[in-house]
Length: 261
Image (tube, rainbow, N blue to C red; front, side, top):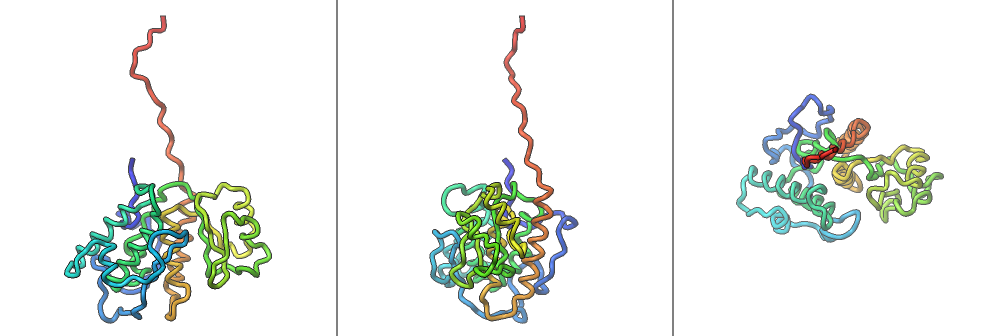
């Protein structure tokens, strides 16, 4: 069975949506120049669904442990380890345990060790699920930048409490379950959302979008470029997911001789 890698760039550039560049950089190396430096913030490892990763911030030592690299590793070795870890914890491959939390931890560790912004990592390394969705889009993603939250007259939390909840900080709605896209209450909640901020996505798309959203929410520096990238990826996901077709099951042919007489 062929698996789509979560973080390997597409080999067909023509099919990739033009995305806003968050910085002038090369995808050959994810180590920025001094002019591209940004505030040195601690990286939070919280998972949206609990489990794995813990609540404490990563430091450089624990980040190296996550990626399995030595302090003296080269940028090429760091990138290779990052890609290998993401492949290892891809939802199609790792069906046991919390692959969501582990992939987020790997992305955050790479963000810290490369001193590169999360949006740049996603833009240069994580477009495959948006070019070629790995499955039908039945997971849910709430764009909390647009969500009215508890003041919404058509609250998705009230319409489908088993699938949505309010975030502890900010009071915006957040999806809390997976694979509920065909649930009637969820469909009602999505259909009546006045801001159109709830989207059907694949598991891989959801992980990337939530990581990018977390990098935008509650940070003390300008995130307009990250917000533009988030919007572009949502549009790209909707377009490609509408084109997705389930693979047809091949009929089984018996190789045994059948004597009809």
